[in-house]
Amino acid sequence: MAVWRARAPERLVIAPQDLRTADPTIADDIYGGYFVFYGKAVNTKGESPFLVASPAPAWTQALMGFAWLRHLRAAETAIARANARALVDDWIALCGRPPASDPGGRQAHEAGWDAAVTARRLMSWISQSPLILEGADRPFYRRFMKSVGRQAAWLALALQGGLTGHARLLAAVALAELTLCADGLDALRRRAQRYLAAELDAQILPDGGHIGRNPAALVDLLLDLLPLRQAYAARGQEPPQQLLNAVDRMLPMLRLLRHGDGALALFNGMGVTRPEALATLLAYDDGAGAGLAHATHSGYLRLQAEDALAIVDVGAAPPRDFSAEAHAGCLSFEFSVAGERLIGNCGAPAPNRPALREASRQTAAHSTLVVADTSSCRFAPTTALSAWLDAQIIAGPRRLEVERGADGRSMTAIHDGYVRRFGLRHRRRLALTPDALEGEDELQRVGKPRTDAPPAPWALRFHLHPAVTVAPGPDGYGVLLTPPSGAAWLFACDVAARIEESVHFAAPDGPRPCAQIVVSVDDGALRPVRWSLRRA
Image (cartoon, rainbow, N blue to C red):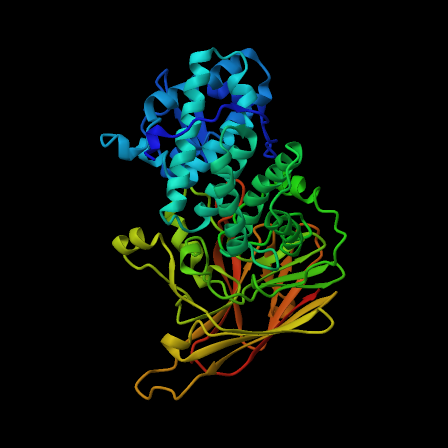
């Protein structure tokens, strides 16, 4: 079946709830021709937003995804409804045919038919259909439904044609939602439900983590899966068991990754936490089950002693198709006390800052051990290869040994990310009490050392939160860390430590300078280095 001959649904019966926060003031900006996504603002000056020059790929994807329709709906005005309908109609006229049926299409047009963008647009149109269709005439209604059918067929073909990665699950969710909310798509409904069940089994791990290991993926997926679950109930249909199981597992996983300040730990592509989104999701978690402390499949471990908390990355690199956002942060940790973060990772920058993305993924941007300023993962190294592999990890830690103490306050873990290049394994031990975090790091030789290779220097890095002030400790001993509350902590080590500059990529207002503690073993000696962080 050709995409442009796709079957249009007969009618939309229900509109799923959009759980994402809406701001009615943004509706005025859109009406005035201002479209702001990821910090990039464009004034269309009366021209269609789908024809103006794009300032960044992420801006184009956000525009074409139509998630911003929720702001127009929140305005609850006739002008906002008319504006929404006009913009949807504009997209249908200018970009409404897939690139294969429009070889002369513009680059922005082709970006709008990326599978993930198409899935997001389809879900946005369905959830905001009351806004789009209220007061619409019959010709527009037919154009709208025909376009919905075309996009659904495009996603079905993408799924059938071997679409991979996170986009495959997103496409399956979009199709399942459409076929549940519309009449006349019974055959596609059965296929969509099979795709959904298969992808949830494949991508949501038994402990509730996503196979790509990015905490942000859990937030985005739950914002889509919870309305889908509600839609099944509204139509009086039994949801796939895989959907119910996935939601039940993912919510406790969010709790494991959550610091006392309400934000998620900065691992594997996690950037700024949207507190309103996280609060919305956790409202669906009754917390009846036992708290998750060691996600063995996802590779995360939580140590807690009263108000002191350490979250540790003890996982291998994700499968290649899901590794485009993953970081080389194996055995890195984040430490917070009473809701204040002291030590963490640098986090991921916003999508509008692609130049910083590579730096944020390096091992040196994480609170862990680094050998010879080399990352424990290898990323696609050249521009051409990166385009082909989509910035995937092509080599990284695969085998980890993890032991968690019976008291839930200590752990020992080893990873093999440096074995191939240096013949070394990294072993890290952490022990937490309410007043101290003690650590020990060492490199262990694997096999016979090369006689012609000099010892590789290595270093421990501890990145501090931007709100933490840092100074030499009393009498020049150690490093004194002081969070905003004034409750100081003293870092001490049996090797000299120094303070260096660092960057916190995941601040809401963009990258912010911060400090890091660096402990260097320049002679490459394979001796344990012991360190501690204690209440001053």
